[in-house]
Structures are given as structure tokens and as C-alpha cells.
Length: 129
Length: 130
Image (cartoon, rainbow over all chains, first blue to last red; front, side, top):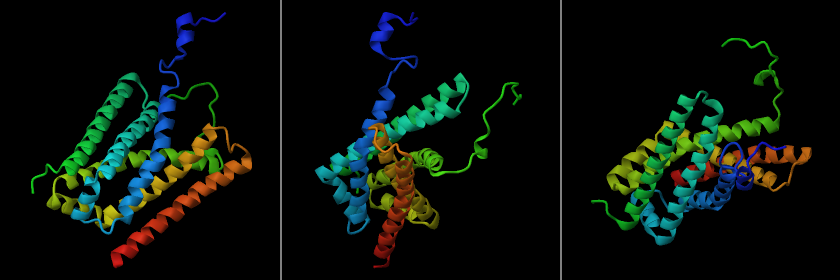
């Protein structure tokens, strides 16, 4: 006889309450990051130079801007998923674990948001000369 | 820490190093290092949004000897995590689990990451000379 409730069995979320959601999100972002990060890395490497004007003009193009935004968003999400597992594995005790997981999430939203804002400012040229 | 009476599994260090455990540990290490790389990436992007002067000072920091060392290690972390990540994706699809395949793909990930890192930095060094 199973002690699991009929609802629990139907939802299929298991004892961790989120089923395969974390695992699946990590795989989807991993697949997306293969072309995104390679594009970002080799686009920069193949620019004629890494001086201010060249990089700004490159990032301000709609195509580069879109892919750079996607790269930052998916990169921070994938990195967040990975470092969350590291903290869950090595930080013991509920108070320390909850506090560090919460701090981690705040930092990722902060840096992801800052990166996205920076790209948008380059694309829409709102920086003062 | 009090020593529990029950038997414990041997300490990590007692195991003989082999490619499977090395790539597994390295995957997590490089992932953590790449998380720090996001901070550097955001710093560089924010400086770009801040104008030519801010960008210039950020590039001077990143192009200092310590900055170049960081970027070099970061390049290896990037390529290793990428190649070994693709290896994991193949495993998730149920492909490449045989002993010989596992060992071969592990060495390809390590050697490929080293080769790509050196290749990229040769190109950068060549560009800096010109």
C-alpha cells in the first residue's frame, strides 16, 4: 500500500515538491547556451578591435543586442540553477542554507538586471557623452 | 566533529584519480568559476554603457597582468564547461555510457578545452602584436 496521497501521485512532484522542473530547466538552458555563448565569444574575438567605438557599434545593432540580451538572461538563469545545487550540497543547517540561497537569488537578479540594463543603454544610446 | 560509531565511506582522497571523477569535479569547479565570470562580464557591459572613459578604465583593469591571468583561466573554464556539458547532454539522451566511450569523451573534453584556450590566446596575442 502506498502512503502517497492520490493528488500527490497525480501531480508527480515528489518529496522535493518541484519534480523534474529544476533538472529540466538546467538542460534547456544548457542547450540554448551552446550557440549563444559561442556566438558571444567568437563575435567579440572576430571584431576588428575591442576599442570603445567598435564594441559599442557592434552591440547597438539590433541582432547583436537581441542575442546579447538572451545570452545574459539565459546565462544568469543557468548559473543560478547550478550554484543553487552547490549551496544545497555543501551548506548545512536550515538557517545558513535558506539565507545563502536567498542571498544567491538576490545577487543573480541584481547582476542579471544590471547586465540587461547596460545592454539596453548601449542599444538605445542614453549615456551622456 | 564527533566521530560517529557507524562505519563511514572512505575519504574522497583515498580513491585513485581517473578521468571520470576528474571531469566531474572539474565541471562543478569551472561552473562556480564561470559564475564569478558573470560579475566580470557585467562590470565590462556596465562600463560600456557608461561611455568611453568608463570603458577605458575597465579595459585597463581587465588587461592588467592579473586581469589577463583571470581571462586566460576563464577561457579554459568556459571551453571545458561547454565541452563537458555537451558530454552530459549526450548522457542525458542515453548515448556514450560505455567504458571506452566515457573515457574517450572525458579526455576529449580536457584536451579540447586546453587546445581551444591556447588557440584563442594565440589569436589574441597575435592581434595584440599587430
